[in-house]
Image 1 (tube, rainbow, N blue to C red):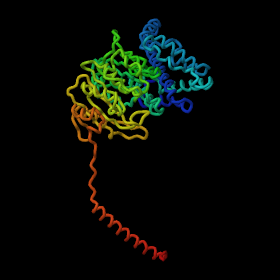
Image 2 (cartoon, helix red, strand yellow; image 1 turned 90 degrees about the vertical axis):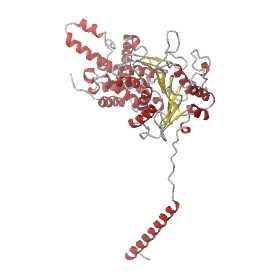
Image 3 (cartoon, rainbow, N blue to C red; image 1 turned 120 degrees about the vertical axis):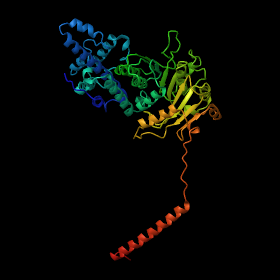
Image 4 (tube, rainbow, N blue to C red; image 1 turned 60 degrees about the vertical axis):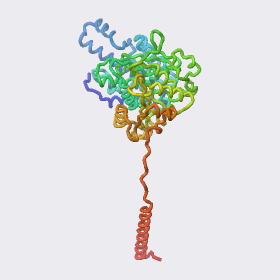
Length: 504
């Protein structure tokens, strides 16, 4: 057994190379599910094999004891359902059917932990081509994952961070290369990191993302707690409307070692599933989200009679659901400790009518803490700039801090990003809570009222740069001097031409 350790970069490259099997044949928004599910299957199979071999070395003469100990594994792996068992039969017809049977067996053997996780993914689907093509694609995929670099036994890779890191790496690459459809389920890592810092998750916090996608925002909050207090307890909660993306989130949690989580599948606005036994909305210390921008058909028809009273400040427009998600998040904050950060399009800051009334109520109730303008082209699938709103149930003052971070970023060809320097500056300004020339402004309620509760950042943060005064007479003198130099050069050139016999 090789003791050679694998680096994060090595496993990332090997996992991404496995996607070559599908490129040019199937759209990335489709094949991401197959690759990510295969990574999960390979990992739990390698863990099972690693632990089994370890127990066998210790208790080789007692197979019953080994079998009993294996029942306590995080994931039970039924006979014939492991990656190795499937890989051994890869040259036979029926790869898709065998993989589906294995996944269903794993789901059944692990009860509530993996219930329905694989129901939206079928390796036997026609979208992979006819039977022969499908069999070849899946054979190549298994051969890619069988390569030594993707040996994910704990005795080789060490901590779960590498496996979770590979999963996040793949998700981010899919979002970057597959356009809007794939970008919907992923918040760029640096934006997630910034939001996690803004809400400052603490030991013992209940943390929720009501539109959790693949779970990256929740995981960044968890990492924030771990970096401050290694083994501090906390709990993660989420809900996701798209079944296949919900499955990604579930697998993502397990691959990052986050067993204390509850991720529900369903539409948060029409059917919030994170409830108490009394059938009220569950409350959280931290709520973070990157909801779909200006969602049409968000559930307006039923919102007026919402049993949870989420829209008492007003009904959002029928074709723009931004304030539906904001209203939901506010109503799920704990009364004393609750704080939230949400990504929104800039229209949320200034659009009138019902949105203006909701915005006014949020400000007058002293819930809005900070408005942060982000650079353009940060988010996958859209080039428009976005903003982050931070709200709190209990604030230290009655002011709103505006930060214009839109002009400082690392430029990319298709995607811009925030570097550590930009994130640190935003957070330091947020933490300092003071005005900063051409970057931040701390506004009081009267100023916001004078602006009719319009929160458009340029109304508060003056970024105007005075142009350097131009001395027109100096410019004229410089121009005359250049003309004289040009006349002299032309005269000298004529002389050289005459000497060479080209003169008239």
